[in-house]
Length: 224
Image (cartoon, rainbow, N blue to C red; front, side, top):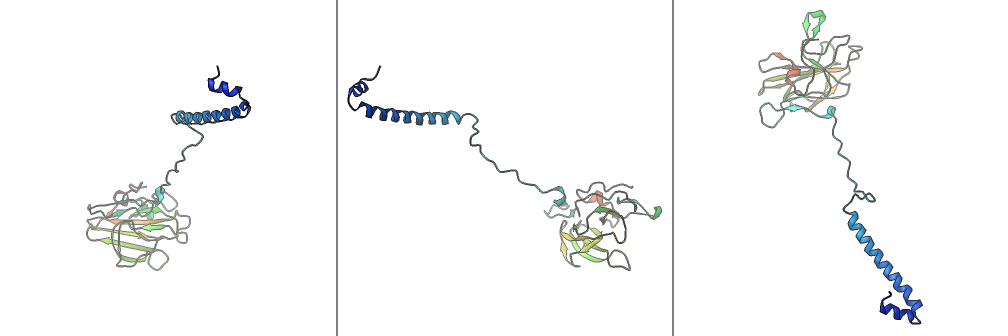
């Protein structure tokens, strides 16, 4: 049944002009209400029309770029560090890179560990201390160099061979500071896996296995 007011309006001469306007107004109001109700209901569901975008997870540094260090005396400063991120050199035509591996047909033992390193790669100090020496790794030639670090407080001494020195004698370094870059061994040892040689003397002045002393250094121990 049509409401009384609208019935009278329908009977009037202006009905044909007014009624369409009222219908459009009522329809628009219903649409607004419908949209609001839809938003309220949709907000409780799983809306997919406008998904919330989240930032991608941060890119973390690879293992090869992370410097692994160890604080011996608890002063908050690193005392030991891994010189390069790569593993100990395996067995090739020149033997094994492991500590104590046979050299010269068994006449001597390997005094350190050989850590794989590409020529030009950054090499870091294995201990904190003072640069006490730099020089030729072999007498009579100057192509291959070494860097020696000494720490009278921890009583550790380290020598890293096949490094182009980037530090001066007498300078102080923290474990993990860059001391130079790895050199190429191709001219002297054709076909060998390029590496740096690391020797460490312990608190009693004796050679120790760097694989058992330096942090994060896998595969350093044992004979080949």
